Length: 284
Image (spheres, rainbow, N blue to C red):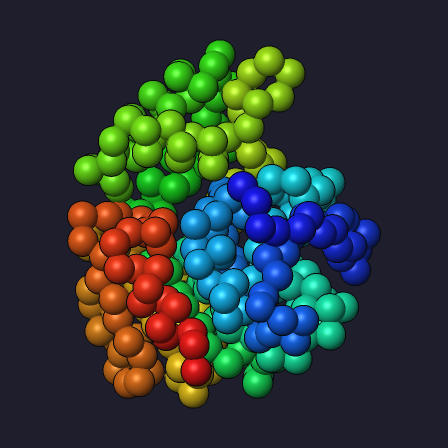
């Protein structure tokens, strides 16, 4: 992919994080920060980000333990609030006072927390297929595969595995789409194809209390009620229930909801009409 510069940023505790920096139409263009999901990386926004650069500078960081960012020796620091602290330090170092955020899954939860902890920073929020109540079926599915896939002998084997565990999420995808998706999720190292994240990011998941987390997340989401928001939900998602969406809309009456047909968790944001909807929402 082209159209971005590689940027590196040092966190307060000394790790180096990688960021794709897509320049806007002018030096002082408004900023959009794109935040990926638990096991993902900056490549998840390789279609959306260039589509926004006619109006915005787009920053797509990789959280610690993912992609080209450093892995953390202390597994306990693979935690939501630590990621949020990293992002707040990043935008502060770049002198950014206000920005819009697009957050997929874990990135959406980060958006809740970033806004609650730093009121006024986020001007608009796009939340992709996540809410304060994380459905148990989806959470268990995620726990079942985080950190355990591969290594694979080649890209064909990696693609076949990925399709076998994700076909219900994207039932209409072609073989070419699955091959492209594999190259977003995995990387080639030492002659094998492996997951593009630290497998130890799964360890904190086993110690979390879902009830406690849910109460906290609802509190964080409540602070978003004054921020114009777009909630995107995959029609087939197993992580964001319709009842949770209804409760979110009650708490945030001005929030717009966009359903993506024939897609589970989480939409790639390049589905027909989705990129356009995000652009139209973000442009003041």
